[in-house]
Image (cartoon, rainbow, N blue to C red):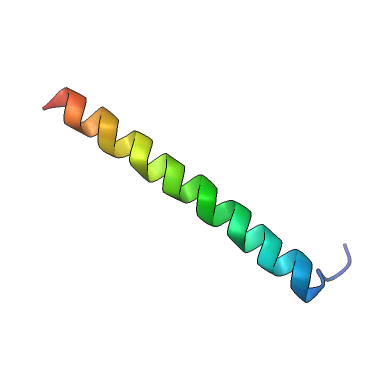
Length: 35
């Protein structure tokens, strides 16, 4: 596997950041629903 270029790295970080943000929101909603 080749090393990612800086722009690929930042794109990956942005994508993961969005996924984590959405996941946290979903988790928060689920947690609220339980209590």
